[in-house]
Length: 58
Ligand SMILES: [Zn+2]
Image (tube, rainbow, N blue to C red; front, side, top):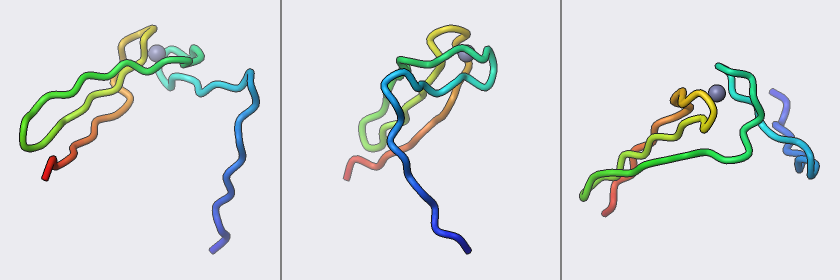
């Protein structure tokens, strides 16, 4: 398997929302929980959920 390559994005390069296809320059998120934190990240334009993550605060 080929090794994955990382390349630094240019100043004017931004990720695109897969739902509304607008550039995402800011991701909104909220966290909740005490023993574990569940975070939700969403697009600021169409509010589509882009990802969820769970972290154990131990
Ligand atoms: Zn969007």
